[in-house]
Image (cartoon, rainbow over all chains, first blue to last red; front, side, top):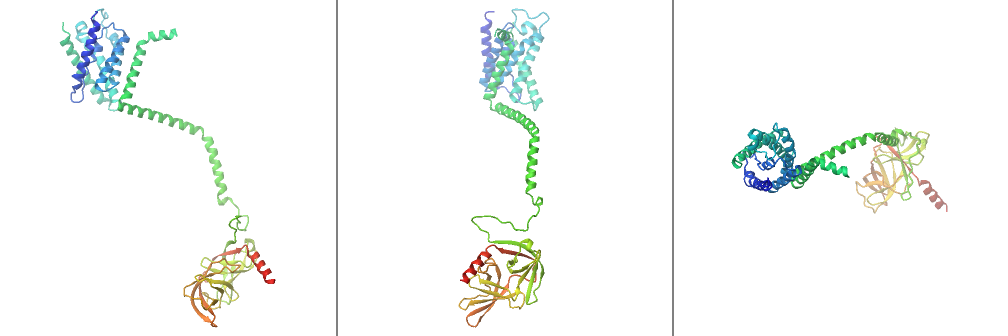
Amino acid sequence: MIKVLPRNIVRFIVLILAQILIFNNIQFSGYINPYIYVLFILLVPFETPKWMLLVSALLLGLTIDIFSDTLGMHSIATVFMAFIRPYVLNIISPRDGYESGTFPRVSYYGLAWFTRYASILILAHHFVLFYIEIFRFGNFFSTFFRVIFSTIFSLGFIILSQFFVYRH
Amino acid sequence: MRNLLRFIVRHHFIILFILFETIAFFLLFQYNTFHKAKIVTLTNSVRGGFSRVFINIKEYVSLREENRKLIEENNKLYNLIRSSYRINSFESLNVNDSVYKRKYIYTDAKVINNSTNKQYNYITLNKGKNHGIEPDMAVLSNDGIVGIVKDVTENYSSVISLLNRNFKVNAKIKRTGYFGPLLWTGKGHSKAILTDIPHHVQILVGDTVVTSGYSTIFPEGYMIGITSDYKLKGGNYYEITVDLATDFKNLSSVQVVKNLYREEQIELEKSAESD
């Protein structure tokens, strides 16, 4: 358990680097941007204090913003995502709750649970992010498709990463 | 204070969330030109909408005052228009001006009787004593001089036409300034003669003949006619035939001129002569 904090810090840095150096340069048909850095928020331990969650979300968002020159946008989306995470966890909690000493991961709660959990939060994040970026509700559906497709891609990368990086 | 702290502690998650989002939005609007422009446009339109509503309300509330002002304005304008005046006096308007003293008063009149075929022709005008017409006032038309008022009744006046053997007016040639009496010889309604012009004066056909300033009746420089012929009479003086500018066969609207200083001038000249 003591290794949790350094591990999260390392994950924080690695995810940011991966996002900035690799995924920010990926644009499928100039339309779909995967944002995998949200994985950090997804994987934060259940017991993390809520304020800590928000602070780390703000830090994460700000860092991404600074490197992609979109000051504010990612911060808004990420803080929002961190804000709704406890409620989402509540809604989709397994019948007998979350066991202590476990993490919100595929290996603990299964692929189906993780997919549901991740898709809700990623969708929320992307929804906020893209609408803040476009900053109007005209062409609502054009933006909405971007949200959906980007969510699918981000989700795909994140789930894939679960199998590559965190094997049993 | 403690309650406040407890409140903050209990809701720290939401408070923190709102705080962070506020910070993030602040950054967004501060450092992204597009979003900044958007939000400025939005706030402007919101503000514009608000102020429009406010102005509408204000206008509605002040309608009573506006109406009062409009009524006052209407009254003012009604008081100015001509139709709300009754003609109270036949006297012409006298303006008191200490720099320009008024010398002539013009009154318009209609010719209601006119003759040109006699030796002593008279014209009758439709205005008389009631309208301020007095004997010895000059009568002019738009083209040139017409005559001199001789007699007036309450509402009519009789004018000695220029086409009258008794008519005489002091005239001058505009170009040279030499003057002499102008008379009608009884021949034709369009010709008169100007006499007493010295023989050394060069006369040209086409010279303009106007009233001289030596008359107490006619204003100076008023058109009489144009020279058409001249001949020396008795070796010393020219007798100049003048084509009259006024068409006496077609005379309808004339102006009667009162010289306000005539009395004074005549009085002075009389006292000078009697000495």
